[in-house]
Image 1 (tube, rainbow, N blue to C red):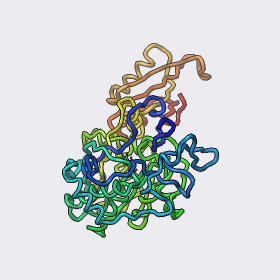
Image 2 (cartoon, rainbow, N blue to C red):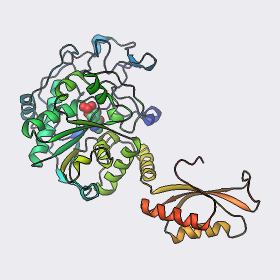
Image 3 (cartoon, helix red, strand yellow):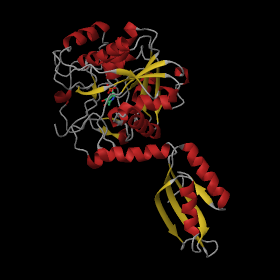
Length: 396
Ligand SMILES: Cc1ncc(COP(=O)(O)O)c(C=O)c1O
């Protein structure tokens, strides 16, 4: 199968370094490891409008899916036929719950310490690194639905569940279970803005190829949603929003700092959506999110945390022109020390400065406590120095 690319578009980091196993969701308790559900050939990716499936190589120049060097027969799952989409039913989810009851580990769904910060009552459903199959097989959709059953049982009177969307199987199963038991609970899907294929499908009325770019939520980078997932989810998903890379990074950071939970980009998208201004209707409401994946390697995590700190205004960079007389730079570092900012990088140069010869340009990256602290430091710098360039748009 070496000719078949993984269903997820690799992130830039993955293309550089990852040799980790293919991207099954390492998800919550209610999924189908050890399932006694009938198995298909394990390759459930549908051809879209008869042209290709998610395993097909994507030819961006043609702006459509094509399969190269892949035997179509090899990758077709009869259960994922674009001409006969299967709408999974609630009975399938209950049957799945019964069949997989001995194969899954139930996880907690606890009130999060992030609740106050978000101005709502947040419940987070933990991950058990459950190995799952591909997202569009009806059995998988039903199995993932059991996650919805668990959440509804664990958190009564839930106003909304915010669910990451890649191929759409997870949201399809969860929405089905949740809407069947609690019709008033809103189902909100979240995609990376780098790959908004579910939003495109909703607009088009059918799964459609969506141009995508690398994203921190690499688990969600599926350019065409599944036919069965879409058929099941389209009428029961209330809203779909997209989130930016910056917000995904901040969400990963918050989950580590506040919840002590290491969550990959895809799994952090629900929180990213809550941090955005796209769901104002959830303020003061009871909301659950699945932390549905922890596959993030440490190098990527390190970079993401730095990005998160920068996006959060806690890692700042600026350029300031100070006196080049003895003590000029010392004055600057003293100001920063007095303000409690920690210098991460500092660099000074004279050669390209056009102003007076006894000045030096200092480029600094500092760590601060929070965004208010950063604003105060900027204010102090501007008070003391005439030339201060501040912000992430700086090129240095
Ligand atoms: C961590 C994580 N969360 C959520 C999803 C979304 O699942 P689906 O592709 O069924 O929409 C995926 C997909 O693999 C995932 O890896």
